[in-house]
Length: 319
Ligand code: NAP
Image 1: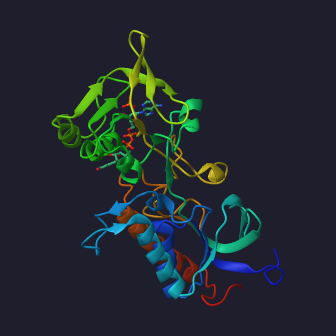
Image 2: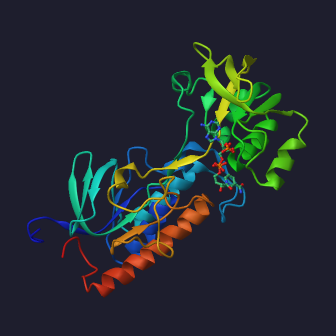
Image 3: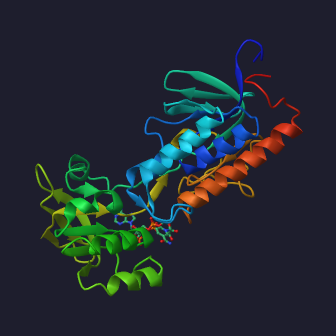
């Protein structure tokens, strides 16, 4: 492509959670003039949470959406530009890279992809129909609505234990439904939950249907060993079966592992020079706002080094 014909961005950052926004703050301060394609649901998973008590610097805690708004304002202070659209596709084989958002075709010399991850669902029609009506994937966001009620948590991993632990403080009873009879969760988290008097386990069991018309009234269960079907009355269902990285648009473009996470070399690099990764789309293990922010910072440093090595100017939009 003729660089004079199209405006080639120096750096495009895809995603506006803690990873993308931290990358933007560092890159903007480093004079890389970043453009952030923020997504329609800008701000990422933290916009779905309430109290964030573990992000350093906020001794009294902070609300997730407020933290993200602050990060965005900070990035804007250094003149980061934003487009609130989703990316539909990318062509990373082209040079400059091509990024197609919902309404625009953009090109860039370098990219930081920070699209994060989203909660996984069981895949039941009834589950989707009752989302927001008693079905949730975020205890911290929605637990308050179930104060004094009976809820179930599906899953046997760390997320399920964390969700159950949180809900046990609010709800009359929390029933953990797990498809096996052994938890995947770390023992320390499993013990924390097992010692709660108002937490019960239902083992070797899958949810096959969520019951209720206007709101959740129960779940239909299937024993994975005997096939026996039963019903359990509950007021709310929290699905905590893991997260899925938001990498569908990268499938033909970058190396992904069997779970869809981007395979990175070192900290942030991909096999394609100039394409860097930050945050949950490559992080199966930590998935914390602060680790994502750290990854965003590293990606911005790596981009700066890359662009310097390419001897591309670090001012203005184009080359
Ligand atoms: P995970 O470790 O993959 O566990 C998912 C759980 O959901 C498993 O018990 C799995 O059952 C179950 N499951 C998956 N698909 C299911 C389905 N379709 N129907 C019913 N059950 C299903 O995911 P995670 O708990 O979200 O944790 C992900 C990573 O984040 C882990 O590395 C974890 O350590 C980390 N994490 C850490 C903390 C912390 O506080 N340190 C908190 C949250 C997450 P099986 O066991 O049978 O596969």
